[in-house]
Each structure stands twice: as C-alpha cells, then as structure tokens.
Length: 323
Image 1 (spheres, rainbow, N blue to C red):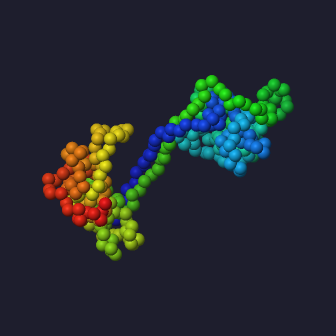
Image 2: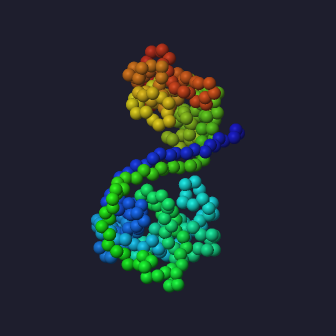
Image 3: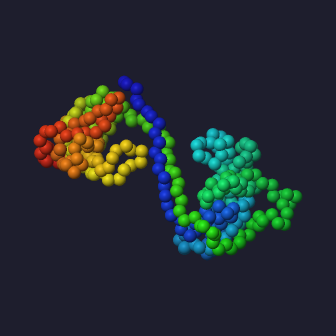
C-alpha cells in the first residue's frame, strides 16, 4: 500500500466585529489601565463584564471599577508556549478573581515554575508597555505580596468596587482579531490515491460495490450505502458543466482576475460532480451542459482550470441527477 499523504495546513482570516457599550468601556478601560466589571441586580460583579445577566438575562449597564490585584482560583502549567501566546517562556494559565469581582478572569501568570503557583496565591496585573484597547493590554499576571509590610494606605487596590461612568476619550468601537487554525491534514487511503493519480494527470475515483456509483473525489466509503469502496475507476478526462457561479469579488492572495466562473463538473464516468474553475471562454458564455476538459500546467498536481472541448453541449437528461 502506498504511503498515506499528510501535510500541515493553516486556516487564517481576520475576524472583525463591533462592540457594544459594555465591551467598549471594558476594552477602552484596559487601554487606560482601568479594569471594569458590571454589577448585576443582585449585587454580583462580573469581570469580564457582559451585557446580559447569565442568570436572569437582564440587561446590564452598571459599570464598576475593580482592583488590578486578585486571587488565583485555579491554574494549569503551560510548559511549551505556542505562537502568539502571551509569554514565550513557560507560564501558568490561571483563573484570577480580581479584588471586588465575583467571577474569574482567564489570563497568563508569569511564574518561575509550577512549584511557585498555587490556588489562593495573590497576583496583580502587569500592564503592557503599549496598549491598544484589547485583552492583551494586560500583558500577564505576576505574583504579588500584599501583606501589610508591603502595602500602604494609598496603594489603590481596595477590594470594594467603585462606580464608573464607562466614559473615556476616543472609545474603542470595534475589534479585529486574527482567527487561525494550524493542523495536520491526512487525506486517507482513498484520497491519497486520487491525489497521486492527479500528479500523473489522471482522475481516479472508486466504485461502490453495492449501488455501483463512482465517486470522484473518492471518500473511501459510499455516502449512500455506507459501505467501503475499494475498486478504483479512471474517469474523464472530459466532463460536463452541471451548474456554475460567476465570481465578481477578487480573493486575497488569489492571482485570478474577476469576473471568472467556478463550476461543478461531472467527469465522464463519474456519479459525483467536482468543482473547478472554467477558462478559455468568456464568463458570460459558460452554460449548463458545456463540455470541458482539464488544462494542466507544468509541474502542477492538479488541473489549473477546465476549458471547452468544442463538442456539442450535453443533453440535460445525461447530467440532471448530478446537479
């Protein structure tokens, strides 16, 4: 059996959202080195603040300021920090209940080792040098000894939350966060054979032993009958456009001029349509039933696009089940 393929893949995109008045005040406060919570009707103080009471669903707007010091309620040691985590040296993930709050805030705790961390330890905020109105304005938490010998009457760390208007100059109204997923993908036995065949400019599917349908790309099992598929069948290279769409918005990092056409193509001998770009014809002349063939580029492991073959259009009845 040939070696099953695998490859590292990354899915990444910027996530943009607006923030309401409560989150706006919280994020802007962090920029100004102020930690805000929100008070519920029964007197609880929630940090981070939310717009609706998780118990009663009441709208919450009563903002209060809590202390930048707190107590670790639980923690876990991170011995191997990953990319974009708060610290690049081993640290603890900790839930910290800030003084004056009734809920805990998750963040990094900078400590020399797991033996230096324990539930109930006192910590304080270490502010980032440059703050932009994000949770990362808290660089991390750090151990803090607030015994009487180290704290004076003016340390500003009272546990009693104080009312706050939530008003700041130049408030944060929206955020952009990079969503990213790193993972290793393995296509499995069936699709490994399919990808290897593409490298030889062939399209290979698998036939279901029960319903006899040929699936391209192969799944390793019939989606209709639920039985394993092992019989390989070469299909194409030509096929028929079953349906299509015209793309008018240029995708980032994709060197294709708009408008262009993306279509479902039923390869000859296949019982499942695959999708690919249509080229070699004006976008407004692409149509259902158009007969097409693959165009390969030098060194490519898959067709660059499909182009018209010049054959008469396929009769609708020959592909209607593949729409």
